[in-house]
Amino acid sequence: MKKKDTLFVGLMLFSMFFGAGNLIFPPFLGLGSGTSFWPAIIGFIITAVGLPLLVLIAIALVKDGVNTLGSRVHPWFGAIFTVVVYLSIGPFFGVPRNANVAFEMGFKPFLGNVSLSQPLLLLGFTAIFFLLVFLLSLNQSKVVDYMGRLITPILLLSIMVLCITSFLKLDQPLQAPTDTYQTASLFKGFIDGYSTMDALAALAFGIVILTALKQKGITGKKQLTSYTVKAGLIAGTALSVVYIVIGLLGAKMASYGTFDNGTAVLSSAATILLGNGGTVLLGLIFTLACFTTCVGLTVACGQFFSKMAPKFSYLQVIAAVTIVSFLIANLGLNQIIFVSVPFLVMAYPLTIVLVSLSFFHRFFADSQQVYAGAMLLTGIVSLYDGLKMFGLQVGFLDSVMSNLPFASVGLGWVVPAIVGAVAGLLIAKGTRSSATEKDLNIGKAS
Image (cartoon, rainbow, N blue to C red; front, side, top):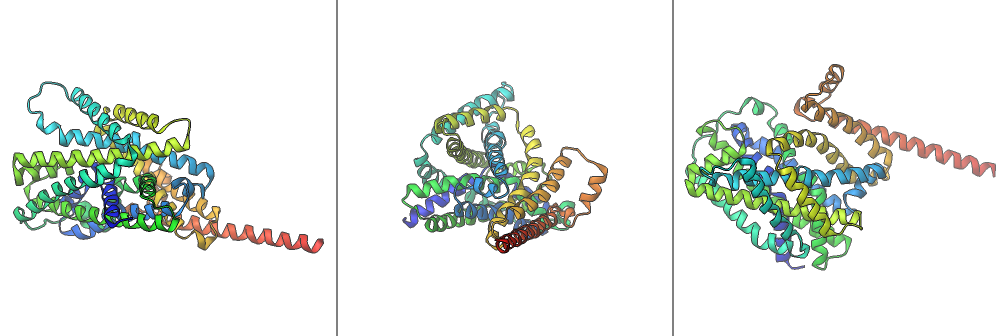
Protein backbone atom coordinates (compact mmCIF):
# COMPACT_ATOMS: atom_id res chain seq x y z
CA MET A 1 0.00 0.00 0.00
CA LYS A 2 1.31 3.44 -0.90
CA LYS A 3 2.42 5.83 1.83
CA LYS A 4 -0.20 8.39 0.81
CA ASP A 5 -2.93 5.74 1.21
CA THR A 6 -1.69 5.03 4.74
CA LEU A 7 -1.75 8.77 5.42
CA PHE A 8 -5.33 9.09 4.19
CA VAL A 9 -6.46 6.11 6.29
CA GLY A 10 -4.81 7.76 9.31
CA LEU A 11 -6.52 11.07 8.55
CA MET A 12 -9.83 9.27 8.16
CA LEU A 13 -9.29 7.70 11.58
CA PHE A 14 -8.48 11.12 13.05
CA SER A 15 -11.69 12.59 11.63
CA MET A 16 -13.77 9.73 13.02
CA PHE A 17 -12.27 10.14 16.49
CA PHE A 18 -12.34 13.92 16.52
CA GLY A 19 -15.87 14.87 17.50
CA ALA A 20 -17.74 16.93 20.07
CA GLY A 21 -15.96 15.73 23.20
CA ASN A 22 -12.53 16.18 21.61
CA LEU A 23 -13.28 19.87 21.05
CA ILE A 24 -15.12 20.61 24.28
CA PHE A 25 -12.95 19.06 26.98
CA PRO A 26 -9.32 20.11 26.21
CA PRO A 27 -9.99 23.89 26.37
CA PHE A 28 -11.99 23.46 29.58
CA LEU A 29 -9.13 21.38 31.01
CA GLY A 30 -6.71 24.16 30.06
CA LEU A 31 -8.96 26.76 31.65
CA GLY A 32 -9.05 24.91 34.96
CA SER A 33 -5.50 23.56 35.11
CA GLY A 34 -3.64 26.83 34.42
CA THR A 35 -0.04 26.44 35.55
CA SER A 36 -0.68 22.70 36.04
CA PHE A 37 -1.57 22.41 32.36
CA TRP A 38 1.21 20.05 31.26
CA PRO A 39 0.64 17.20 33.73
CA ALA A 40 -3.12 17.55 33.20
CA ILE A 41 -2.89 17.40 29.40
CA ILE A 42 -0.46 14.46 29.58
CA GLY A 43 -3.00 12.55 31.68
CA PHE A 44 -5.71 13.50 29.19
CA ILE A 45 -3.64 12.30 26.22
CA ILE A 46 -2.96 8.96 27.93
CA THR A 47 -6.66 8.05 27.97
CA ALA A 48 -7.82 10.11 24.98
CA VAL A 49 -5.00 9.05 22.61
CA GLY A 50 -2.84 6.29 24.07
CA LEU A 51 -5.68 4.05 25.19
CA PRO A 52 -7.60 4.21 21.86
CA LEU A 53 -4.36 3.35 20.05
CA LEU A 54 -3.86 0.31 22.29
CA VAL A 55 -7.47 -0.70 21.64
CA LEU A 56 -6.92 -0.50 17.86
CA ILE A 57 -3.82 -2.70 18.13
CA ALA A 58 -5.68 -5.21 20.32
CA ILE A 59 -8.55 -5.35 17.81
CA ALA A 60 -6.11 -5.87 14.91
CA LEU A 61 -4.48 -8.80 16.73
CA VAL A 62 -7.65 -10.85 17.13
CA LYS A 63 -10.31 -12.23 14.84
CA ASP A 64 -13.80 -10.65 15.03
CA GLY A 65 -12.55 -7.69 17.05
CA VAL A 66 -14.10 -6.68 20.33
CA ASN A 67 -16.38 -9.74 20.47
CA THR A 68 -13.33 -12.01 20.62
CA LEU A 69 -11.79 -9.92 23.40
CA GLY A 70 -15.00 -9.98 25.42
CA SER A 71 -15.47 -13.72 24.89
CA ARG A 72 -12.24 -14.35 26.77
CA VAL A 73 -14.22 -13.43 29.88
CA HIS A 74 -17.27 -15.47 28.79
CA PRO A 75 -19.11 -15.86 25.47
CA TRP A 76 -22.20 -14.18 26.92
CA PHE A 77 -20.13 -11.31 28.26
CA GLY A 78 -18.46 -10.91 24.86
CA ALA A 79 -21.80 -10.67 23.05
CA ILE A 80 -23.43 -8.32 25.56
CA PHE A 81 -20.39 -6.10 26.05
CA THR A 82 -19.92 -5.70 22.29
CA VAL A 83 -23.55 -4.78 21.68
CA VAL A 84 -23.53 -2.31 24.57
CA VAL A 85 -20.34 -0.65 23.25
CA TYR A 86 -21.72 -0.22 19.74
CA LEU A 87 -25.08 1.07 20.96
CA SER A 88 -23.46 3.53 23.37
CA ILE A 89 -20.95 5.05 20.96
CA GLY A 90 -23.57 4.84 18.22
CA PRO A 91 -27.28 5.71 18.39
CA PHE A 92 -27.70 5.96 22.18
CA PHE A 93 -24.98 8.43 23.22
CA GLY A 94 -22.13 9.20 20.84
CA VAL A 95 -23.96 10.08 17.62
CA PRO A 96 -26.80 12.11 19.22
CA ARG A 97 -24.30 14.06 21.35
CA ASN A 98 -22.29 15.04 18.29
CA ALA A 99 -25.41 16.12 16.40
CA ASN A 100 -26.48 18.30 19.33
CA VAL A 101 -23.09 19.96 19.62
CA ALA A 102 -23.07 20.60 15.86
CA PHE A 103 -26.42 22.37 16.29
CA GLU A 104 -25.31 24.38 19.31
CA MET A 105 -22.02 25.54 17.80
CA GLY A 106 -22.42 25.29 14.04
CA PHE A 107 -25.97 26.50 13.52
CA LYS A 108 -27.54 28.18 16.54
CA PRO A 109 -25.13 31.18 16.72
CA PHE A 110 -26.29 32.32 13.28
CA LEU A 111 -30.03 32.33 14.04
CA GLY A 112 -30.15 35.87 15.38
CA ASN A 113 -33.72 36.83 16.28
CA VAL A 114 -35.43 33.86 14.63
CA SER A 115 -38.79 33.44 16.36
CA LEU A 116 -39.07 29.64 16.06
CA SER A 117 -38.57 27.69 19.29
CA GLN A 118 -35.31 25.83 19.83
CA PRO A 119 -36.94 22.34 19.79
CA LEU A 120 -38.36 23.03 16.31
CA LEU A 121 -35.03 24.37 15.07
CA LEU A 122 -33.21 21.36 16.52
CA LEU A 123 -35.75 19.07 14.84
CA GLY A 124 -35.15 20.66 11.44
CA PHE A 125 -31.37 20.76 11.81
CA THR A 126 -31.05 17.13 12.94
CA ALA A 127 -33.37 15.96 10.14
CA ILE A 128 -31.03 17.44 7.51
CA PHE A 129 -27.90 16.46 9.47
CA PHE A 130 -28.84 12.78 9.74
CA LEU A 131 -30.02 12.60 6.15
CA LEU A 132 -26.52 13.68 5.09
CA VAL A 133 -24.93 11.22 7.55
CA PHE A 134 -27.05 8.43 6.06
CA LEU A 135 -26.19 9.33 2.48
CA LEU A 136 -22.44 9.52 3.11
CA SER A 137 -22.52 6.24 5.06
CA LEU A 138 -24.14 4.38 2.17
CA ASN A 139 -20.89 3.84 0.27
CA GLN A 140 -18.41 2.28 2.69
CA SER A 141 -15.62 2.12 0.12
CA LYS A 142 -15.70 5.90 -0.41
CA VAL A 143 -15.47 6.84 3.28
CA VAL A 144 -11.66 7.06 3.14
CA ASP A 145 -11.81 9.35 0.08
CA TYR A 146 -14.53 11.62 1.48
CA MET A 147 -13.11 11.94 4.98
CA GLY A 148 -9.38 11.37 4.59
CA ARG A 149 -8.80 13.36 1.42
CA LEU A 150 -11.44 16.11 1.63
CA ILE A 151 -13.05 16.79 5.01
CA THR A 152 -10.14 16.15 7.41
CA PRO A 153 -7.67 18.57 5.76
CA ILE A 154 -10.31 21.33 5.91
CA LEU A 155 -10.97 20.52 9.56
CA LEU A 156 -7.29 20.55 10.51
CA LEU A 157 -6.63 23.77 8.59
CA SER A 158 -9.55 25.49 10.35
CA ILE A 159 -8.31 24.40 13.77
CA MET A 160 -4.78 25.54 13.02
CA VAL A 161 -5.98 29.00 11.90
CA LEU A 162 -7.80 29.48 15.20
CA CYS A 163 -4.93 28.17 17.31
CA ILE A 164 -2.13 30.06 15.52
CA THR A 165 -4.14 33.27 15.88
CA SER A 166 -4.55 32.59 19.58
CA PHE A 167 -0.78 32.17 20.07
CA LEU A 168 -0.14 35.46 18.29
CA LYS A 169 -2.76 37.49 20.15
CA LEU A 170 -3.20 35.84 23.56
CA ASP A 171 0.00 36.49 25.51
CA GLN A 172 -1.38 36.51 29.06
CA PRO A 173 0.46 34.32 31.61
CA LEU A 174 -1.21 31.14 32.82
CA GLN A 175 -3.36 31.48 35.93
CA ALA A 176 -3.23 29.39 39.09
CA PRO A 177 -5.14 26.11 38.78
CA THR A 178 -8.64 25.76 40.19
CA ASP A 179 -9.27 23.55 43.22
CA THR A 180 -9.92 20.54 41.00
CA TYR A 181 -6.45 20.67 39.43
CA GLN A 182 -4.37 21.90 42.38
CA THR A 183 -3.44 18.34 43.36
CA ALA A 184 -3.13 15.18 41.27
CA SER A 185 -3.68 17.12 38.03
CA LEU A 186 -2.23 14.21 36.02
CA PHE A 187 -4.91 11.86 37.34
CA LYS A 188 -7.63 14.47 36.87
CA GLY A 189 -6.62 14.80 33.23
CA PHE A 190 -6.59 10.99 32.98
CA ILE A 191 -10.25 10.84 34.09
CA ASP A 192 -11.18 13.79 31.86
CA GLY A 193 -9.99 11.74 28.89
CA TYR A 194 -12.86 9.30 29.47
CA SER A 195 -15.32 11.92 28.24
CA THR A 196 -14.04 11.80 24.66
CA MET A 197 -15.44 8.23 24.44
CA ASP A 198 -12.56 7.44 22.07
CA ALA A 199 -11.47 4.19 23.75
CA LEU A 200 -14.99 2.84 23.31
CA ALA A 201 -15.13 4.27 19.80
CA ALA A 202 -11.84 2.53 18.97
CA LEU A 203 -13.50 -0.80 19.76
CA ALA A 204 -15.92 -0.01 16.94
CA PHE A 205 -13.56 1.83 14.59
CA GLY A 206 -11.20 -1.14 14.51
CA ILE A 207 -13.48 -2.96 12.10
CA VAL A 208 -13.77 0.15 9.88
CA ILE A 209 -9.99 0.51 9.64
CA LEU A 210 -9.48 -3.19 8.93
CA THR A 211 -12.16 -3.07 6.23
CA ALA A 212 -10.55 0.00 4.64
CA LEU A 213 -7.14 -1.69 4.66
CA LYS A 214 -8.53 -4.90 3.14
CA GLN A 215 -10.08 -2.82 0.35
CA LYS A 216 -6.56 -1.53 -0.33
CA GLY A 217 -5.32 -5.11 -0.76
CA ILE A 218 -3.88 -5.69 2.73
CA THR A 219 -4.93 -9.16 3.92
CA GLY A 220 -2.16 -10.75 6.01
CA LYS A 221 -2.56 -10.53 9.78
CA LYS A 222 0.90 -9.04 10.33
CA GLN A 223 0.37 -6.50 7.57
CA LEU A 224 -3.06 -5.55 8.89
CA THR A 225 -1.61 -5.03 12.37
CA SER A 226 1.34 -3.05 11.00
CA TYR A 227 -0.79 -0.70 8.90
CA THR A 228 -3.33 -0.31 11.71
CA VAL A 229 -0.51 0.82 14.01
CA LYS A 230 0.76 3.26 11.36
CA ALA A 231 -2.71 4.71 10.78
CA GLY A 232 -3.24 4.90 14.54
CA LEU A 233 0.05 6.76 15.06
CA ILE A 234 -0.89 9.28 12.37
CA ALA A 235 -4.29 9.86 13.96
CA GLY A 236 -2.82 9.87 17.48
CA THR A 237 -0.14 12.41 16.61
CA ALA A 238 -2.70 14.74 15.03
CA LEU A 239 -5.04 14.36 18.01
CA SER A 240 -2.25 15.04 20.53
CA VAL A 241 -1.14 18.21 18.73
CA VAL A 242 -4.70 19.50 18.50
CA TYR A 243 -5.40 18.71 22.17
CA ILE A 244 -2.29 20.58 23.29
CA VAL A 245 -2.93 23.69 21.19
CA ILE A 246 -6.64 24.05 22.02
CA GLY A 247 -5.85 23.18 25.64
CA LEU A 248 -3.30 26.02 25.76
CA LEU A 249 -5.88 28.29 24.16
CA GLY A 250 -8.23 27.46 27.03
CA ALA A 251 -5.48 28.07 29.60
CA LYS A 252 -4.81 31.55 28.17
CA MET A 253 -8.53 32.38 28.16
CA ALA A 254 -8.62 32.22 31.97
CA SER A 255 -7.60 35.89 32.01
CA TYR A 256 -10.78 36.84 30.16
CA GLY A 257 -13.30 35.66 32.75
CA THR A 258 -15.08 32.51 33.88
CA PHE A 259 -16.73 30.01 31.56
CA ASP A 260 -19.16 27.18 32.18
CA ASN A 261 -17.84 24.72 29.61
CA GLY A 262 -15.45 24.21 26.71
CA THR A 263 -17.88 25.48 24.09
CA ALA A 264 -18.11 28.81 25.92
CA VAL A 265 -14.30 29.01 26.06
CA LEU A 266 -13.92 28.41 22.33
CA SER A 267 -16.80 30.70 21.40
CA SER A 268 -15.35 33.60 23.38
CA ALA A 269 -11.85 32.95 22.05
CA ALA A 270 -13.06 32.88 18.45
CA THR A 271 -14.95 36.16 18.89
CA ILE A 272 -12.04 37.88 20.65
CA LEU A 273 -9.52 36.73 18.06
CA LEU A 274 -11.45 36.95 14.79
CA GLY A 275 -14.71 38.76 15.48
CA ASN A 276 -17.70 37.53 13.42
CA GLY A 277 -15.30 35.59 11.22
CA GLY A 278 -14.27 33.62 14.30
CA THR A 279 -17.87 32.57 14.90
CA VAL A 280 -18.09 31.31 11.32
CA LEU A 281 -14.76 29.48 11.60
CA LEU A 282 -15.71 27.85 14.89
CA GLY A 283 -19.07 26.82 13.46
CA LEU A 284 -17.26 25.16 10.55
CA ILE A 285 -14.87 23.35 12.91
CA PHE A 286 -17.62 21.96 15.12
CA THR A 287 -19.89 20.98 12.24
CA LEU A 288 -17.15 19.13 10.34
CA ALA A 289 -15.78 17.44 13.48
CA CYS A 290 -19.17 16.25 14.66
CA PHE A 291 -20.34 15.23 11.20
CA THR A 292 -17.28 13.09 10.41
CA THR A 293 -17.52 11.34 13.78
CA CYS A 294 -21.21 10.59 13.21
CA VAL A 295 -20.43 9.12 9.79
CA GLY A 296 -17.63 6.97 11.22
CA LEU A 297 -19.79 5.68 14.06
CA THR A 298 -22.73 4.98 11.75
CA VAL A 299 -20.53 3.01 9.34
CA ALA A 300 -19.02 1.05 12.26
CA CYS A 301 -22.47 0.16 13.62
CA GLY A 302 -23.66 -0.80 10.14
CA GLN A 303 -20.72 -3.13 9.57
CA PHE A 304 -20.99 -4.75 13.00
CA PHE A 305 -24.74 -5.33 13.30
CA SER A 306 -25.17 -6.47 9.68
CA LYS A 307 -22.44 -9.07 10.32
CA MET A 308 -23.83 -10.10 13.72
CA ALA A 309 -27.39 -10.43 12.38
CA PRO A 310 -27.08 -11.22 8.63
CA LYS A 311 -30.84 -11.04 8.10
CA PHE A 312 -30.47 -7.27 8.47
CA SER A 313 -28.60 -5.63 5.61
CA TYR A 314 -26.02 -2.88 6.02
CA LEU A 315 -28.54 -0.44 4.50
CA GLN A 316 -31.23 -1.40 7.03
CA VAL A 317 -28.84 -1.06 9.96
CA ILE A 318 -27.53 2.40 9.07
CA ALA A 319 -31.11 3.53 8.41
CA ALA A 320 -32.08 2.32 11.91
CA VAL A 321 -29.00 3.94 13.49
CA THR A 322 -29.70 7.33 11.91
CA ILE A 323 -33.41 7.23 12.82
CA VAL A 324 -32.78 6.27 16.47
CA SER A 325 -29.96 8.84 16.71
CA PHE A 326 -32.28 11.49 15.27
CA LEU A 327 -34.96 10.73 17.87
CA ILE A 328 -32.55 10.70 20.84
CA ALA A 329 -30.74 13.84 19.63
CA ASN A 330 -34.01 15.74 19.97
CA LEU A 331 -34.13 15.00 23.69
CA GLY A 332 -31.47 17.69 24.09
CA LEU A 333 -27.76 17.79 24.92
CA ASN A 334 -28.12 18.12 28.70
CA GLN A 335 -30.20 14.95 28.99
CA ILE A 336 -27.75 12.98 26.85
CA ILE A 337 -24.71 14.14 28.86
CA PHE A 338 -26.50 13.48 32.17
CA VAL A 339 -26.81 9.81 31.29
CA SER A 340 -23.62 9.33 29.29
CA VAL A 341 -21.04 10.54 31.83
CA PRO A 342 -21.94 8.01 34.59
CA PHE A 343 -22.07 5.31 31.91
CA LEU A 344 -18.52 6.18 30.81
CA VAL A 345 -17.32 5.97 34.42
CA MET A 346 -18.67 2.41 34.46
CA ALA A 347 -17.54 1.35 30.98
CA TYR A 348 -14.03 2.80 30.75
CA PRO A 349 -12.37 0.80 33.56
CA LEU A 350 -13.77 -2.44 32.07
CA THR A 351 -12.40 -1.47 28.66
CA ILE A 352 -8.98 -0.57 30.08
CA VAL A 353 -8.69 -3.85 31.98
CA LEU A 354 -9.93 -5.99 29.08
CA VAL A 355 -7.53 -4.42 26.59
CA SER A 356 -4.59 -4.49 29.04
CA LEU A 357 -5.08 -8.20 29.72
CA SER A 358 -5.19 -8.92 25.97
CA PHE A 359 -1.53 -7.91 25.66
CA PHE A 360 -0.48 -10.31 28.45
CA HIS A 361 -2.82 -13.26 27.88
CA ARG A 362 0.00 -15.46 26.51
CA PHE A 363 1.71 -15.25 29.92
CA PHE A 364 -1.28 -16.78 31.71
CA ALA A 365 -2.22 -19.22 28.92
CA ASP A 366 -5.28 -17.20 27.93
CA SER A 367 -6.94 -18.30 31.19
CA GLN A 368 -10.62 -17.40 31.36
CA GLN A 369 -10.39 -17.27 35.17
CA VAL A 370 -7.89 -14.40 34.99
CA TYR A 371 -10.16 -12.36 32.73
CA ALA A 372 -13.27 -13.19 34.76
CA GLY A 373 -11.67 -12.35 38.11
CA ALA A 374 -10.25 -9.03 36.95
CA MET A 375 -13.43 -7.95 35.15
CA LEU A 376 -15.69 -9.01 38.03
CA LEU A 377 -13.95 -6.89 40.68
CA THR A 378 -13.40 -4.00 38.24
CA GLY A 379 -17.09 -4.13 37.33
CA ILE A 380 -18.23 -3.99 40.96
CA VAL A 381 -16.19 -0.87 41.69
CA SER A 382 -16.92 0.93 38.42
CA LEU A 383 -20.63 0.09 38.62
CA TYR A 384 -20.81 1.64 42.08
CA ASP A 385 -18.89 4.72 40.91
CA GLY A 386 -21.33 5.17 38.04
CA LEU A 387 -24.41 4.72 40.21
CA LYS A 388 -22.93 7.17 42.71
CA MET A 389 -22.92 9.82 39.98
CA PHE A 390 -26.66 9.22 39.62
CA GLY A 391 -27.03 9.96 43.34
CA LEU A 392 -27.36 6.35 44.50
CA GLN A 393 -25.20 5.77 47.56
CA VAL A 394 -25.07 3.12 50.28
CA GLY A 395 -23.30 4.19 53.46
CA PHE A 396 -21.37 0.98 54.13
CA LEU A 397 -20.35 0.47 50.48
CA ASP A 398 -19.40 4.11 50.10
CA SER A 399 -17.04 3.81 53.06
CA VAL A 400 -15.42 0.69 51.60
CA MET A 401 -15.10 2.11 48.07
CA SER A 402 -13.73 5.46 49.20
CA ASN A 403 -10.95 3.70 51.16
CA LEU A 404 -9.69 1.75 48.16
CA PRO A 405 -6.19 2.76 46.96
CA PHE A 406 -6.33 5.57 44.36
CA ALA A 407 -10.08 6.08 44.94
CA SER A 408 -9.45 9.76 45.67
CA VAL A 409 -8.25 10.26 42.07
CA GLY A 410 -11.01 8.19 40.46
CA LEU A 411 -8.96 5.02 40.02
CA GLY A 412 -10.32 2.89 42.85
CA TRP A 413 -10.83 0.00 40.41
CA VAL A 414 -7.08 -0.49 39.72
CA VAL A 415 -6.14 -2.58 42.78
CA PRO A 416 -9.33 -4.71 42.67
CA ALA A 417 -8.57 -5.45 38.99
CA ILE A 418 -5.08 -6.66 39.91
CA VAL A 419 -6.39 -8.69 42.85
CA GLY A 420 -9.05 -10.27 40.65
CA ALA A 421 -6.49 -11.18 37.97
CA VAL A 422 -4.11 -12.72 40.53
CA ALA A 423 -6.95 -14.66 42.19
CA GLY A 424 -8.05 -15.94 38.79
CA LEU A 425 -4.50 -17.00 37.98
CA LEU A 426 -4.20 -18.94 41.26
CA ILE A 427 -7.54 -20.64 40.65
CA ALA A 428 -6.50 -21.55 37.10
CA LYS A 429 -3.19 -23.02 38.31
CA GLY A 430 -5.00 -24.95 41.05
CA THR A 431 -7.50 -26.32 38.54
CA ARG A 432 -4.75 -27.38 36.13
CA SER A 433 -2.79 -29.05 38.96
CA SER A 434 -5.85 -30.98 40.06
CA ALA A 435 -6.56 -32.08 36.49
CA THR A 436 -2.94 -33.18 35.99
CA GLU A 437 -2.94 -35.15 39.27
CA LYS A 438 -6.20 -36.82 38.30
CA ASP A 439 -4.80 -37.82 34.91
CA LEU A 440 -1.73 -39.29 36.58
CA ASN A 441 -3.87 -41.32 38.98
CA ILE A 442 -5.97 -42.64 36.11
CA GLY A 443 -2.77 -43.58 34.26
CA LYS A 444 -1.42 -45.49 37.27
CA ALA A 445 -4.71 -47.31 37.79
CA SER A 446 -4.76 -48.46 34.19
